[in-house]
Structures are given as structure tokens and as C-alpha cells.
Length: 417
Ligand code: EPZ
Image (cartoon, rainbow, N blue to C red; front, side, top):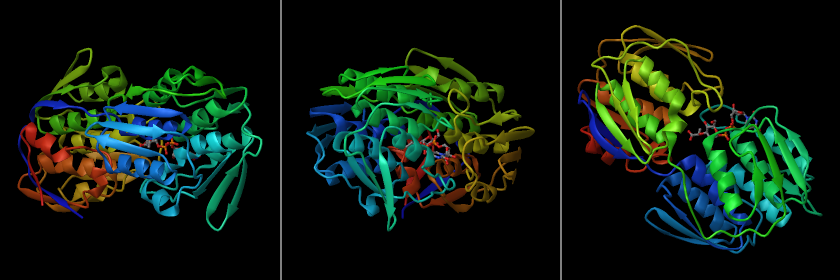
């Protein structure tokens, strides 16, 4: 299962290069199903979730080859239309292959994605939207079969909630549908714009990527020689939190500062100084952070839910009481019991977390409960005095490339055991 051994208390200082965004490259890999011809993805992070998505391409009969951060996909259309249960279970966000397979082949079969550590995470918004485009859905023995015998047809779609994954599925399906699709209340996350930039570069006609209204004119031949994945804003927020809790100062290269406005504001409110360059960001933290009241996670451009665990951990030794409100997922606080093993004083009341800043954390054995919760536990261990062990680090390997070596680069005493 793998674990980290961390000797906390070291002030982090130095420069880290941020990788390509996990939550962009996953829908981009799904989008290659719609292409005809080879497509090279640059700045592709080396993550187990990316391996899982590439494994699905193989399952569909689409080959690829990877060389470091470059993945070449031989996208000559899928031969199969079913994602096997074992791959669906590996990664819930495999659901975003639905739109591209259904759009390309008129049929797609997935197993109902299990909930995950963050709560039930249903796919009702996906199903309703694809039905609006003419798909018929049948559920039998745990599988969902989507069919559109005469192909998909454009429609007006209003999302009940600006779901990131559902917006991505609609974009993928509507790009292959006949006619015009308008999506209202679409997700505005930067990863959505990366997907529409990719598809438009391949010859699609999508307007409004990154805004709450999308207009997609579908059914064109798509091909794209190469594309560079946008930087990972949550990876950036993770190193910012690690520097913040240790009173450190770091520079992040290959970031898009505009994607981090809400995160920057929260760290500035906690007493950090932040300087932004065109493609870089520097944070320098005070010896001890100030408490921050009233951070609420929202859809973009609000404070990202994925950075919630990171800032809660960073504020565990702030001076005063901080309050965080989780506005997106039902159950984002699974990691808090682990952080409390370091003598953090955090109580949760439904979506609210109250963080009483303590003067010091002390080392303890703990485990990762999910991807971002695991990163939050590491952040606390970097502060805790003494030797901590953080287990089940496979959660972290889903979303962070070279996490331990990057932290060592900026002064952390962390080794994989
Ligand atoms: C994406 O998940 C990200 N994953 C998540 O990052 C991120 O936390 C989330 O967006 C919110 O920004 C990827 O991009 C691979 P949603 P997604 O659909 O698409 C409810 C990480 O750590 N919902 O916007 O699943 C759902 O239950 C991951 O990298 C429905 O009710 O997020 C949740 O409460 C974690 N019905 C809320 O909406 C639906 O049909 C947000 O979900 C779909 C979603």
C-alpha cells in the first residue's frame, strides 16, 4: 500500500514546477475517442488516474504510446462501446467516456459508478442531459446501456446544477450530435475551457467554453495533431498550503495564476504574501498564519472544493478560529479524524468545519482517506513535530506526480517506505 515517513517542522522553501491538470487531461483523453487520426497530448501528468483513463482507451480498441509527459493517441475510433466494471470501479470519473463513446458509436455501456469517499456522487444530471440529446437509457444487472439508434440530435439543455463531469459529457456528446445544442447553467471550471479549446482546435464549433452558456454545433469530422494540457490548479494549491503551514516561501512555475484567484485570496487573508507572474506564482508565509473566517467552497470561480482539505489543514495551527463551509460534496471531511491524530482541534457540523488553531501539532501514524484528504494529512505531517507515518498513499498517487520528491526539493524530510 505504500507509506510516507515524514519528519515535520521543516520550513519549506524553493521552486516547484507544476504538472498538467489531472481534471483536464481525463476529459481530453475521452475526447480523443471523437477524433480521426493521431493526436499528441503534451504536459500529460504521470498519474494512476491517467493510466486508468488510457486503459479505457485500450479497452475501446484505441492504442496509445507514452513517453514521459507526452502521450500519442492513435485515435481511429473505438471498436468497442462498453467500459468494463473493473475499470469503472477504478475511477469514478470514467463516466466522462459516456459522451464521447455514445457520440461516436451511438451506443455506450457503463456500470453505475459507485459512490466514492466524497459521498454518493450520482449521475442523474448526466443521464437527463444525454436523454435530452436523444439517448435511451436501459439499466440491467448493474449496467447502464445508452443507445441512440439514429444518432444524437442537438437540443436545449438546462442543468439543475453546474456539474463539471456532466458539462464535459454533454460537450463530448453534442459535438458528435446533429444540429445545435445550447447548454444553460454549464460548469465554468477552467478544465471545461481546456476541453472546448481542444475540440475547437480539432474542428468543432463550440462557443462559450468557461462561461455558463455553451452553444455547440455538432457533427463534424474532427482531427487534431497535438495539444498541451493546462496546468493543475489544485496541485498548485497543495504546494501553497504546504509552504503556508511551515512558514515557508515557494515559487511555482507553469501555473495559470488567474485559475487560483479564490485560493490566493484565502492565503492572503491568512497572512501570506502572494506575487504572480505571467505563468508563475510566489507565496511567502508568516511564522504563524492568521485564522480565516468564512471560506466557502463553491463552483468556479469560487473557492474550489478540492482545495478545501488543503486549507483546513494549513489553518490547523493558525492563530484563532477558522470556519470552512463545504458547498459541493456531502462528505469531504473524511480526512479530519486523521488530522486530529496530530492534536489538531477541528470539529465538523454537517458541511461546516470549525478549526481552532493550535500552537503545535505532534507527529502520529495516520492514513490517507481520499486524494485531497490524503494531501491534507501530508500537509499536517509536514508541520507536526517528530516522525509521522502516512499510509495508503495510493490515494495520493491518483492525483500527484512526484509528490514526495517535489516536497524534498523544497526542504521537506519525507521518504517513501
Ligand atoms: C469534478 O468531479 C472533479 N473530478 C472533482 O475533482 C471536483 O471536486 C469536482 O468536479 C467539483 O469541482 C474530475 O474532474 C475528474 P460534479 P465531478 O459533477 O465531475 C453532484 C479531485 O479531487 N452531482 O461537479 O464528479 C455530485 O454528487 C476530484 O480531483 C449530482 O448530484 O463533480 C457532487 O455533490 C474530486 N448529479 C456535485 O454535484 C450528477 O449527475 C459536484 O459534482 C453529477 C454531480
